[in-house]
Image 1 (cartoon, rainbow, N blue to C red):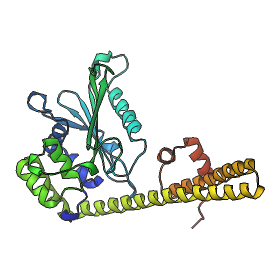
Image 2 (image 1 turned 45 degrees about the horizontal axis):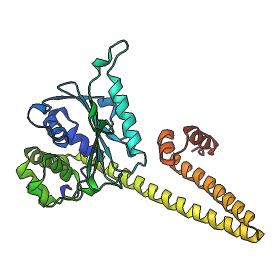
Image 3 (image 1 turned 180 degrees about the vertical axis):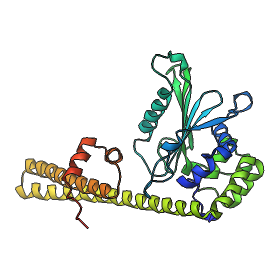
Image 4 (image 1 turned 90 degrees about the horizontal axis):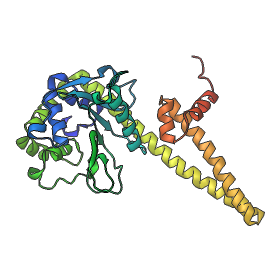
Length: 321
C-alpha cells in the first residue's frame, strides 16, 4: 500500500506526527515548516487535547488537529484539510483565537499569554492570488511592516502548488511539504530521505504502518469516507449549478410569456428563488442523512444554524424497523 499511501489520511497522519513515541518527527516537521534553526529551534513538546482529536468517528471524515505545547510554552496546532472549505481563513483564525486565549486563567495578567502558531496543510488551492505553496501571516504595521507582536503566526500550505524541481536543492520546509504532497513520487521521496534523516525515519514508519492490520483497516475506512464526502460535495455543487440554471430558464420563460420586461424580471427572480430554496432544502436533507453536524452544514452552505435546524425538524421521521 505504501506506493498509493495517502499521507494526509487522518489515521496515517496521526500515527506519524501525533504519537509521543515519535515526537522527534513532529519536532522536525514543526521546526522545518517554521524555518527555525539554531537558537530558535523547538527542542521538546507535549501533546495536548488527545481526547478531542479522534482519528475517525463513525466512518465519517473528520478534521484532524494535532495540538502541542512546545518547550518554551508556545502552542502549535497542526490541521489537515483534504476537502475545500471556502471559509478556511476565517475558520483558522477563529480556532487560532480559541487556542491563544485558552491558556489564560481568570484573573491572570495578559503577559501570561504565550505565542500560538497554526499550521494548515491543505490538499486544495485556497488562495488563487498566489502561485507559491506556503503562505505565512503575522500582525504587521500597514506602512512599515513592523510586527506588532510575535504571538500570532499562521501558516497555510497549498500542497497542490508545490513545484519540486531539483529535489536536492529544497529547503527543510519544502522537503516536508514535498513529502506530504501528491506531486512527489516515491523515487523523489527516496532522494529526500537521503538528505533529511527525519523523512527517512518517516518512510520506515510507513512500512510499519502498512503491516499493522488494525491501522490499515481504519485507514481504509477513512479513505472511503473521504472519497464519499468529496463525491457528495461534487454532486451538491453540480446540482446547485443545474438548479440555478433551471430556475433562471424557467423565470425567463415565464417573463417572456407575459411579454413585458417587468414580467421577465419578476419571473426570473421568482424562478431563481424558488429553485434555490428547493435545492437548498434537498441539499441540507442529504447532508443530514450523511450524518454531518448542523454546524458543519451551516458553514458549507453559508446559512444560519437556525435555518439548518428548521430544515432538520421538517424532515420525516425515519421508518421504524
